Image 1 (cartoon, rainbow, N blue to C red):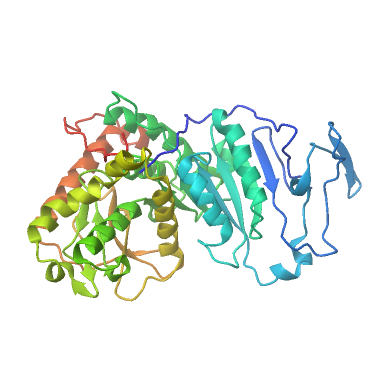
Image 2 (image 1 turned 90 degrees about the vertical axis):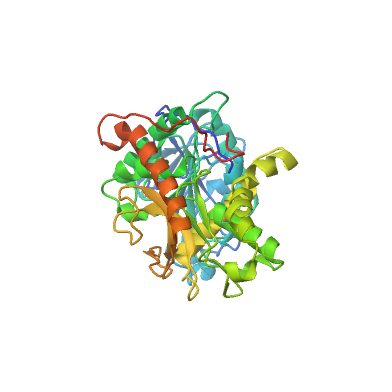
Length: 442
């Protein structure tokens, strides 16, 4: 899975250049850290209100009188200068209440595919207006402006606002969904323990920010690797947010597993269901063929080559990302973005009867005997309300339990490595000599 690079959290000031703008209204306070961009609807009603006014050739802030108060406004141009009254528009009357979605690593390749899916309505629905809150680093801020410009040019009617910034305490304000993609990629010679510590600091700070300023029921999807332990660090630093609301992305692994089973069985991949990825997003992950089904029939009855299931199948899922890099020369940004969409839709859409999906969630109270206090990928169902429940009616034989235990042990070792970031004492690392990073993520 690809990763967008993100530096450690900073709180330095950034300002707009002459081709960007701040959204201005009497109800919104903007600091020097934060930029706010507003996209208007495609069809503007005649009585829509414009609360920002500036000459196209002006280079200085413009003073506008509003409700008897004179306010100084930054230069702006085009649609970013316009603030519309949604109530004045016929087309918005049937829309739901606007939701705020934060995306970190927003200037990276994964986000470049994801943001346009979010803005199009493909994720939350054709009647759900959204505001995008884009978090980047100091060195990516100009790229974020470019992202905002492309979103503007795409004319998405559901995309009402775009905010960009480098301070998570401002970008995460009142967000209901947080998709945390940004993480430092693993460089040459970097040990997994070093990566855990470096990225752990990023996710500890983002967890604190979410805890302080986000919606109290915010749903958090961690993509940046090592995503399971990063999600654990994030939730441990956000005690006011339910631990159940944090997810680590293992949906790409599930999608890859479904594809491999479909190829082996000679069917289209929509015939594969009940696919579980157990454990860590690493080479210890366990693609579960025991409970998976093809056309409603247990996989082991359809694919009789059990040696391939136990050996070749798992390896093909684990090495898919590395093979893609060999073929294409880049990591899996587009399919990762699709898997993020799938993961969110699985939470906001009722799970089909008898099926389930995989996501890395907190293990407290799990029915499988897995150690509590971890973020572990397990089978889940949802009623479509953003919440989920663990699936209880799954079979776990000796082969599966042994593999699950190996991934569990790895996550326990990672947890000990980041104890200083989770408030659980002094950290020590005993990860062992075997590198379990998935191919394509080093």
